[in-house]
Image (tube, rainbow, N blue to C red; front, side, top):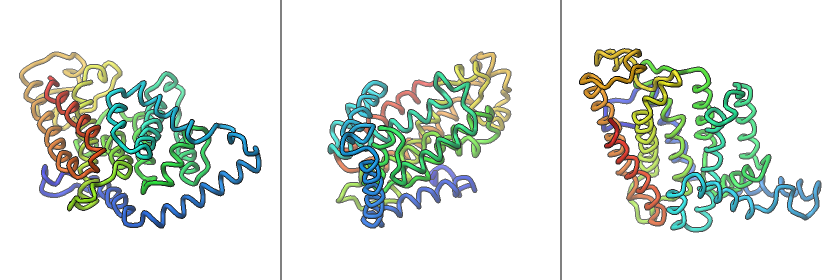
Length: 316
């Protein structure tokens, strides 16, 4: 995932890269997957019709489900939503469905009811994910994602991994090394790239391998999350959390108490300069893949890249 940053991948990076390879391989088997998933979806719809009649299948038509996903995206991610208007209708709706699932997942541990969330609740959410990938959605939002999963070569593993990131947030508030932090960043943000690139598509005339494009999408997610972490150091510390490598803090002559005090010193500036440089290197890695996306999908991705890069440059 960061071959331009280090000579060799760590064991953690190798494990993450296996997911990249798995997702890239699905592109080669797209037709077979579509046929199998479409069959599962037809069986589910037949069961619903048998139980509820030809009306609106209890949760409404798929079109209504996708429209509602679009409304949620427009409300909470306005600029990104505008970018999706350049995509084909099918891709646009699919990205909305993925966005809504990610938002709902994040709100389990970072929303108004997060204090009531337990590991068992996340286990139930993962079971629900597995059901919707098998064509058994629970509600209209699930139905939109279930339909999306039947149309595009999307692997379930990045979705499972995002839930794993939520599990970490229930008990882990410190990261000893960057290797640990990298895995967390993959779970909560790198996964999004692996979810969405199959929908956005690779340009027909691109000479890049699917593997390299997915690798760049992973790097963009890591870069975005690192930027968020650097921007929110103060806010996170007020919640008792430090999303910075503790070993690198120690090497810089800083302690956890320095973070909690929030005092900006020369040591802190030097430390942050190195952290920002690392994030920029991941952005550089991500840039290599944007040009290989389908032309209608490049603008929203490039906008996200540039806005996050700007935030990274403004982080102090």
